[in-house]
Length: 277
Image (cartoon, rainbow, N blue to C red):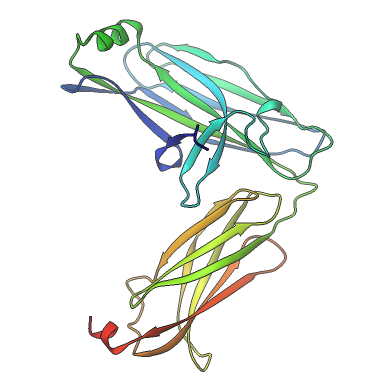
């Protein structure tokens, strides 16, 4: 993980070249940013994405293969190809490693992989698509002869092989901690125990000591890879009613797409001082 390069907002990284006076924004777009291909063991998966020059000058683009992972907080990490347990980087073939795009031009990049017959579950990799600084511009920047800052945008195209035959969804709640009682804020540790990429949603139900529901609100859907641990901080919505002093249970129920729901709970207290604050 120490070798990881991090991408902000889980899909786009921004790199700066040259000095500070004026700014030139990168002139490239990439879509889609995710290729999810249902491909069984022994099968062949294929897809494509489009790289477009949205600027008024010619550009050069490089495309490189990597692995990816998410931190417990949900931030994307870029890792060396083949470095994760469920990497499919060794299977991936793509149509170009470099592109020269004229102003307004576009190129479709094809991606293909052949899944070995002796694997099961989902596997993944990533293609990093980066605009290259122009040679003259780069030389001037290194020599300190330009006052232009070029903001170059790199796009991460995630590749996910989904096993339609041997998928086994599984998940568990490892921990629930109340960070604040009023308004409610809790932290939950969630683990994807299966062999499939899943998207999980759920609800938090606030109950009194007699088991009667006082308030219920939704947990926004979040993705996770097999083996991934997510630490989620969840706040009650502003519209939630104020809790009177007393004892309550926060009951978390999650739907991860499997044959059953998972549930966890935590007792908490709302004191007179908390309500007054």
